[in-house]
Image (cartoon, rainbow, N blue to C red; front, side, top):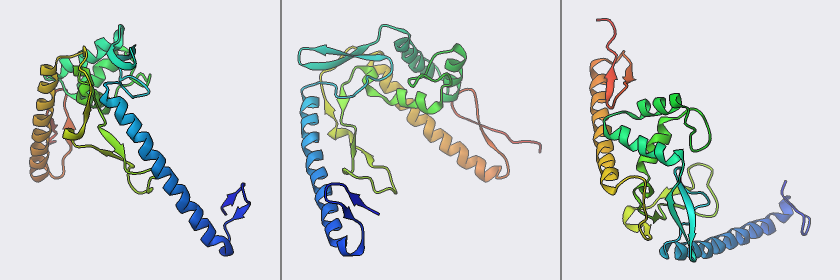
Length: 220
């Protein structure tokens, strides 16, 4: 039952048309308001101001004039980010890096004690760590979710909004190397897994301590 406390509207058959009109009006208002809000946010991004509610792990927000900029944090978090990139560059896998950080007792971005591979991967993919103020990477499909799929979609790279560069935690050269390595690793994993599925259909494909995939062939 739908109840509107403003006019005591109840979701019964005689009131169905009125309810439909109220719902349509509400959705139209939300759509218009969402577009106005988005225009305001885009304007801030184009002036180079960081619009996130929180800075990425290892970075902090700092007010500079009428803008909000990012800079490396003066604490262990920035060193952890640096260690993640360095570890990946020397050949360690996401699993290996997450295990090492967990053993060292470093807290995750959410304050947990156990690091997950997905967290490591998201850090390695965040271009802001290279000092590039890229924003508008994602957007909502609309003011309402359909309940069947994510309401967030990724934006094409050529449509990102860029602000002024800042002092990042890693160099753009190292960031680009990590990006290329991750593409190569993903391609190799797909090839190895495909080969393993065909050759050892009844065996397990396991993660190893370094990048790539180890195949447990069992007893033959």
